[in-house]
Length: 181
Image (cartoon, rainbow, N blue to C red; front, side, top):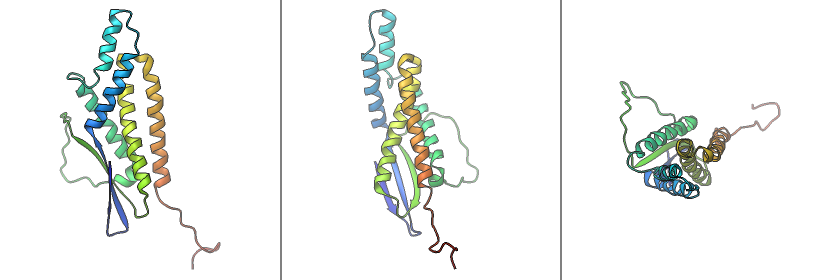
């Protein structure tokens, strides 16, 4: 979900919102399918299936939360030209695990920023978060399946990097080949 707000200085504020419940639901669905397609011809494979499918269950949710937190921070940093926010004086950060209901990425963009671009970024980042967590989780529980999620995650990262480069501003050309007067 995204919101666009008009600012007085010919910019807009775009807020991308990622609901934790939606991210976890996608992780549950993909985890279930990955576990379901595992062959269950031995007891150790049954246990692997169970571990793969339980990606968001009690003991595992903390790992998933840390990975989501890390990747959201990475996305904000990647979009730095739009997300830069001055650090307040005497800020103290800690590593206490918190389960946030929503992840947000607030961007200040030019006034001609397209709503289709905002929607595309929201979809891309949502999928990128899911793909990275799946890659990490499957690298533990089902290594033979992890690589396909890594490819998706790397492709998503590359798309986000390209988007940042593409969106960093218009090139203004002078009307005259001899410069402006």
